[in-house]
Amino acid sequence: MGDFTLGCLLGQYDGAQSFDVASTANPTNIQSWFISIGGTTRHFDATDVHSSAQAYKVITTSYGVGRVVAQIQHSFSNDLLGRAFPGVNTHRHDVDFWARVGTAADSGQFYQDFFLSVPKFIPYGPTLSNYKASPAYIFINSATYVRFVAQPQVSTATLYLDDVLTRVDQITLYPEWSFQEQARLMQSRHRTLGGKAHVYTWGKYFAYEVPLRFLSTSHAALINWWWERQFQLLFTLDTSDSESSFIVRIANDRQPIGGRVKPYADLYQGVLQLESVHDGRLSF
Image (cartoon, rainbow, N blue to C red):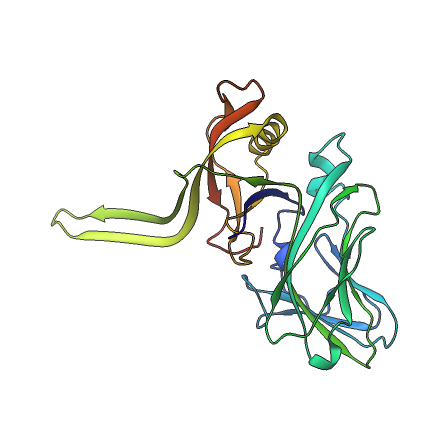
C-alpha cells in the first residue's frame, strides 16, 4: 500500500499534457509542447492511448543521432509555473507519463529526462506503461524542461506517449479514518403529473472528503495557496498503483486549513473537499 499524495500540476489548461488537442497530421507543436521537425514524422494516435482520446506517436528516421522529439519548458510565461509562483525559484519536480516503444528491437532507444537529471530509458511494451521520475529539488530557470529524446540505432523507431503529468511541490498526506471517496452523478430528475419519473444523466465525477490533522505550517500554507488560486492538482490515493491518480481541484467554499491542533502552536488541521476535473481522464 502506497501513500496519499497531492501536487500542483504544471502546463497550460488545454489538454496538451494528454495531447487531447485538435488533430493535425505531422504537427510541429502541440500547444505548449515543442515537437521536433527534423528526421521524424508525427501523428496523433487514437489506438495506443492511456486515459484519453489521443496520444502522440512519433517515428524517427535519424539513425544514430540524438534528437529531441517532444519538449515542454514549464518556465515559459504561458505555463502555470511561469506565472503562479512569483518569487519562488526552487521546487520539487515530479513527473508521471505513459509510454511504450513500438518493437522489441527498438527498446531503450527513447528516453525521458528533466533539466539536469539522469535519463529514464523507455523499453518496448505491447501496451502503454506508467513511468515515474523525480530529480528532487531543482532550480527553475529559462532552460527548465521535461523532454523526450530519440537516439535510435536502427533505421526507424517508434514512440507512443500519453498523459505527461508534471507537478511541483508534491506533499504526502495522512488522512484520518473518516476519509470518504465518492462518485457523483450529474443528473436531473423530473416527475410528471401522472406520477411517471424521468431521470436524465449526462456524466459523473469523483469527490473526496479528506480530513487532515498535524499538518506543518508550510503544508497548511501550501494547501491554502492551491485553494485560493484554484490550481489543478494531481491527487493519488495509492502511490503503488499507477491507476489511482485523479486530477482535482479543492472545492471548499472557505479556507480548508485553519484550525490548530491542541496543544501544538505550529500544527494545523482541516478537511479538504476535492472534486475531479473529469470522469477519470488524466487530461486537463
